[in-house]
Figure 1 (cartoon, rainbow, N blue to C red):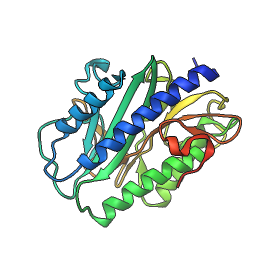
Figure 2 (cartoon, rainbow, N blue to C red; figure 1 turned 45 degrees about the horizontal axis):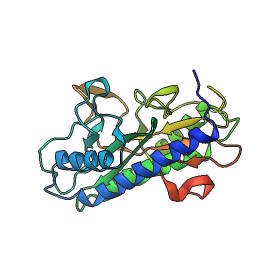
Figure 3 (cartoon, rainbow, N blue to C red; figure 1 turned 30 degrees about the vertical axis):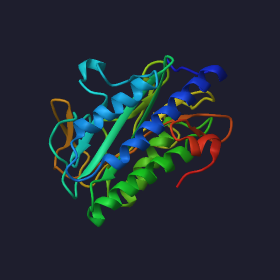
Amino acid sequence: MISVKNAAQIDKMRAAGRLLYEVLTALRPMIVPGAATIDIDRAAHRMIMDAGAKPSFLGYKDFPNSLCTSVNEVVVHGIPNGKPLVEGDILGVDCGVILDGWQSDSAFTAGVGRISREAQRLIDVTEQCFWKAVASSRKGARIGDIGFAVQSHAEANGYQPIRAMCGHGIGRKMHEDPEVPNYGERGHGFRLLSGMTIAIEPMIAAGGWEIDINGWDVVTRDHSLCAHYEHTILITDGEPEVLSLPQFARGEGGS
């Protein structure tokens, strides 16, 4: 069932989004060679709890941590650990918070120290795919328009969107209807309504889109690099609002 939020509920999701943005911003300087992802996870957990919120991921289907930390060919759901990050790695950091009963979900991929030009290009294009999708997320558009925007931009740059993983509705629950795939056809799928809140999350592989699942880790089958970028957005009567990126709220733009 599609959940359309009222003004008071949207304000609560804005507050959750602001907190999540603050947490992820604070984590970025920790992503350096030699750092352990478990320490980054502990820092996120502490900030979320100190703010009177809860980590969305901790305990969700028995997930053991507050962050997903996905290195190189790991697409999503990497479990934080004590292994030091290595210069040249790329790290996807995915986090969710529950504040006053309402959720926000966001992710980014960052380089560890100096990374290759090819790895940086993949990260950049993945973020561009997100903004292409946001531009297609207007009242009256279709879910397929979002997927088409991601897929067409990724493929134009020689990359592939991961097909088996997708974005989702979000609100009181982390995963609500509808699913938001990263590929699709224009004019197909559920029609977007003002007041809908969805998480758009391009996962873009440098190689093929096929995946394998190793425990929690979702990895590219060909072991190519994969980048991930995500925000929680609100469909409005005009420009979409990026709830987990406050400076781009209410249609103030993106890259």
